[in-house]
Image (tube, rainbow, N blue to C red; front, top):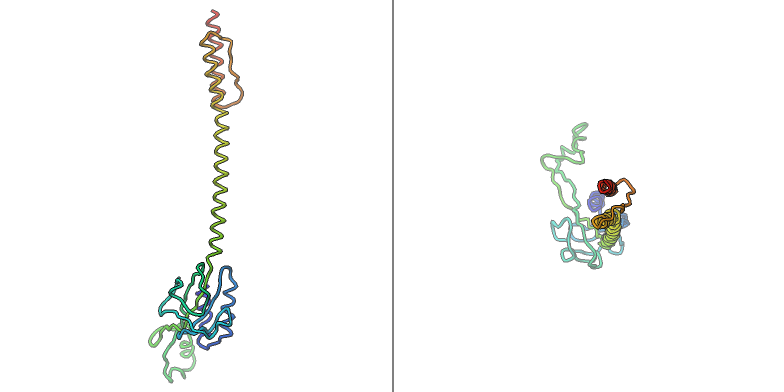
Length: 225
């Protein structure tokens, strides 16, 4: 947002079009979480602001200050200090080219070459003519993070409950049948060869129960013989 604002406001800063610059800043301030947007010239005068009443006031932006900045580095009448507010500063730059009177009067293709909006070569320089500043509130991000934490907590609870249910189901499917096999083994060891184990299903424990029952049948036959 700051880069786009700086790019679109180059002519307005040069021409000191405060009305047009304020419209640009107001458009940026309509974005979600943006608290304010302003444009400042090299003298520190606000030439465009999302709050038109701030235009013409002075603010202090140190030279070469760009990117993310904290409150102590950016002071003045541009905003009301808030703990949740962060600022992004982007230089407003223009390309200047020194031309002689003869070069300005060149005809045809040579003149069109000099009209290139991005010229290069001798006498061409980039100059900073102002700053674009966008203030963004962290409250929206903090609320979003709170929602994310709540969602993660709910997902963790669901996974925990699903794990408990899975463990319980596994216990019923494995542990209980094995306990029945243990009791049946004790009965057979005491001489009761008529004791059989219920075997219903197609899992490994059921197959073990069927094998156990076959063993009991064989033992009973051998005992009778």
